[in-house]
Length: 111
Length: 112
Image (tube, rainbow over all chains, first blue to last red; front, side, top):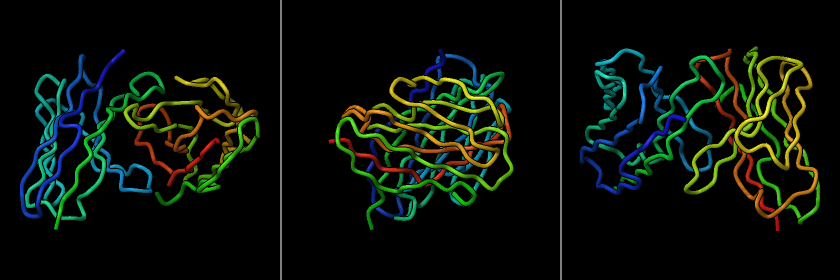
């Protein structure tokens, strides 16, 4: 069973700071998705990465997929309070319906 | 979360009571899912339905039943609620294997 480890588990920073969160796997990802979950809401998709070495940018968010497809990172530049939320990495489905979820990084951006 | 609607948003039950969580999607997707989210445990799959007329157990199915009423609707039933079922429940949907999954806004259930 693939395990997804996310770090750090908690992160509290001041507005304007930069940060990076990580998602690591015990095995190769078929594909990887990053979601953000705001308090009281369901997770919302930010990005999907499928190719080793891939880099995707979404405004101030930069997503990297490791060359070996066993790790990924999310870098946020000049964080804003609106970035506050739980960031989840999700791997799979592949050939079955079972998605594997990391436990998330809970980010708080203080004004 | 547009397109996936869950009801109720909040519910308090007494131990032993039954209830049904409703989920409807207007995205014309084949697959629907029920997850629970607990602190420190992440999201865990309860049941899923690959297509209308089929349902399968996920990681934590005990104490739950599901019904895929039609392509749009997938309900989750607790026949005899237990405090261990206190959780946040999410319905989700996607076109099928490997496709982006879309979540509802969640249902907060407390069993006392």
